[in-house]
Image (tube, rainbow, N blue to C red):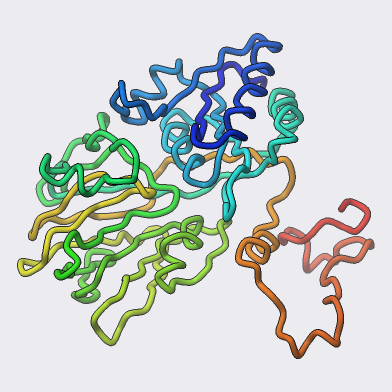
Length: 354
C-alpha cells in the first residue's frame, strides 16, 4: 500500500532530529504526500489526546518518529488509534523500539511506499478505572517538573459504556507500561493487587509496574523484572522496592487482567502511561490493566534481531574466563535447508543472506 499521509513526531531538542525532519519533508514533497508534524510540545499550545492529534493531522497512515524510544512512544500512542504504522528513526542511545538509522530514512520511506517493508505487531495495554483520573491543579507543577507538557486527562472510550462494578474504560493504550507510584518520599503506596479478579497480595512499595513484553526492558527491567520476547503476549507485574518478602515479578497470561486498588492507609499515587503522567489516585481508587484489542504496527526493514539488540544495548560482555575460547561459534546458522522439525521457528537467516 502506498503512503497517503505522514504524521511526523520530532525530538526538537536534538539537531540531528531536526535535520532528519527536513529529509522526511523533502521526501513527502517529492512524492506529493501530505506531511504534518504531530504531538508538538509548544508553550503556546496545549497537548491533545491521541484521537484529537490524529484527527488534526488528517488521520495519517504512516507515523514517522525522529528521536529515541520516548519519541517513538509519543508517535505510537497516536498511531494505535487509527491503525497507522510507525517508522522509528533511531537517534537515541538505549532504544529498543526505533528501527532505522538517520542515514537510511529515504530508503526506508521508499520501501514503505512500495509496500516492501514488513510490519510487526506488538501487544498494547488499556485501562479501566473506578473514576476518570485527573491531576489536581496544586500537584501539576511539581509532578510535571522537567517532564515536558502534561497530556490531557484520559477520557472514557467513546464506544464503551460502564457497568456496575466494572469501572470506566479509558481511551488510552500503553505499548510499554502502566505505572502506579508514590507521590511523597516518606509515604509508600499500599496497594491490593488482583490477578483475574482474585487478590494476590497487598503490597507496601514505592510503586508497581504493569508492563507488556515490549515494556519488559524498560521500567520493569530497572525494578528487577525479567526480559520477555516482544513476539509474545503477556501481562508483566513488577513491584518497585516492596517492603515484603514476596517482591518477585509475576508474568500473567494475556487474558489475565491485573487490577491495583489503593488501600485506605495508602498515600496518594501517580499514574503514568508509557512515561506520561495521566492522573493521581486517592485511597480507595482502583485501576484495572489488561490486553487491548488494538496493537501497534511497527515498520521493519528486516527481521528483528531482538537478542542481538539486547546484547548491544545493555553491553553484555562475556565472562573473562571465556576469553581464551575466542569468539562464540554460530548456532543454528548453516547454509543448508532448515530441518523439518525446526521449520516455522524464528531463526537467523542463512550466512549467504546476512
